[in-house]
Picture (cartoon, rainbow, N blue to C red):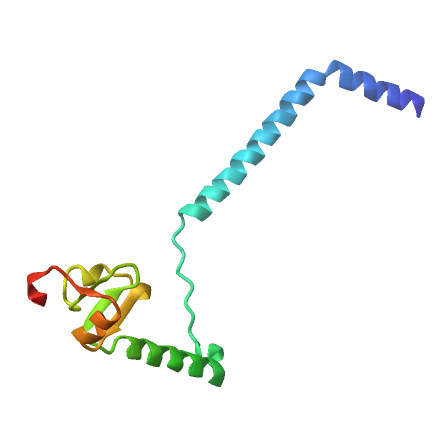
Length: 129
């Protein structure tokens, strides 16, 4: 056994540079192969995920929540004038400035009087005068 280990050690010492070179080539080949597979997966156009049966997500409770949210949004949009929570002006819905108000910041008024009672002033657009 001693003789065998001595021969093995001397073999590695004598051929150390060749062993390192071979190991380097194998590692480079494996890395190149992995990068090639990775770039193929990134570049390939696969079909998008499609949810076919959405009824499994619908329950009576989620349907009721959705209906309540829709009713609430419809009630909020009942009105002739719209204002922003971040401003003191009210506008007609087709005003260029009204279209810039984010949906979550909209406040709807049924009349000019209601808007003015809540501290809002008319927009400077000619169409409001």
